[in-house]
Image (cartoon, rainbow, N blue to C red; front, side, top):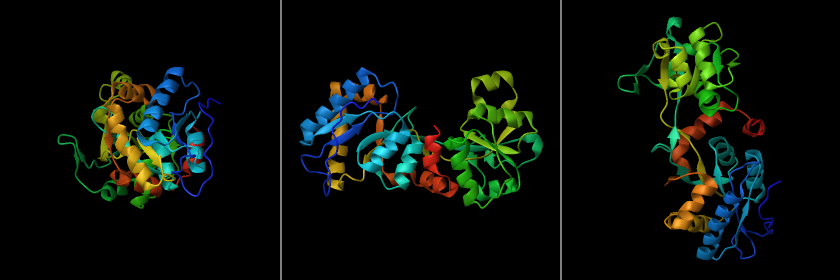
Length: 304
């Protein structure tokens, strides 16, 4: 198991004592590189120098292991994928501090799709990129219809849309899982498998789909499209850190990234170029739909 530094968290009434190290977790991987380890150590060293707290590094192999480490107090600062973040937030283990920016955005959306031939009403105006009705109105037509989902671990292709259906109190038939977003779109185009589905925005324009089915966008319609509510990745701090300590470390992240060594270290250790300050309220809709889905997130995370 690739634990970089095996410094246990000393039991104490609360974090913040000098003998209690703060544990910085690398992104879960079974192939953490020496370069990532050294980069994380550089971040830890700068945090130690600027705060006086001992900061050490750990490298969990899986997101399930990272979630367990957060729960046990063996990780305090971690970059979480959206599913891990949702689970940790549900358990009150973390507070979001920064979100990773990709293509000038911190989040992405989901969309409900159906084939034109099946006669469903689209409540999305593609010309202006806006919905023309509330979610509950758009989804009501899917009552007692069969959904196609991409895969059981997909947020945009299953978990969040399921939460939307549940919030709208729309009961559907048993679902089929296509395996991925492209296969789900193809299922609707071909027909005979399911009545509607959901993908990230806009999976219909995946190059291989457009090449194989030039009229796909005309034949598979967007029924309703969400705002960008699903975060890409979230840099979160453990709730086991007292709020003043979380604030101290949060405020130091930009300062460290302003140094050449610090910026390069975050790039190498975590793979991002830009982050944006956030809080958990910025993802309120995301958390609400996840909760409404009513799924066992721990079991889903363990399947990944």
